[in-house]
Length: 297
Image (tube, rainbow, N blue to C red; front, side, top):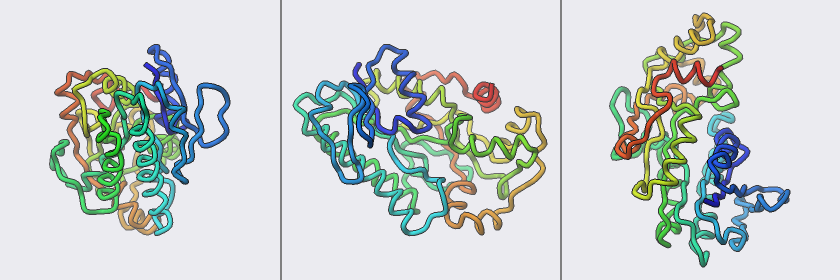
């Protein structure tokens, strides 16, 4: 297949591009700078600009663009950037794809389990309702922004991603230095559930979605065994052979990070990958210890 990828330089995108190429796919990157060859296409999602003709003949699109949720404290201006970078870019892309003469068969437009909000120890599936907080409303609008593509007959899939385990960046990348120094510990009460997935299984899930024509709409892109923050902390410390005795109290996290602390670090989201399991997806790393030992070498 000829696959276009946005956010190709991000945590998932930088792993996905060579993975797709290794599977025999031709990959076209959508970039915000001047293209460096035929394998790149320029677009400007902030201005809503893209030359749709450059996407003629593309079989599938994987849309990963969006400013990092954990990139800093959530001021009003930052919330607007988080919103615009997702909804604006998705709407621009979906409209461009809908206007093509030869449309791709599928648009994989990423989302996140922030859709569900904090639900303590309740099991959550794709049928669970969205939260009414910032991340919940953001995810609802993010998924809805792809509607022009769906209305044009393109199969649209929304992977609701959990915590992606990769040493190259993301949450795990930020944890590694303090944990390796023996400064890691439980966040807040430690009872909050973390729904995670190894980067290898993210890539496998995208490949699975490309070839499974019956997979449409949202699906939870998480491993089948979520863990509490206390379990995650102990397992990461064990994998790194380091103590984990320095907790971070909830009050301190809220003081430093504000609203973002409750919405991310202290949020409890226990998610089940029901639709992936129903479509016979096989996880390479279903357990946390195996996943961490693999990604950390």
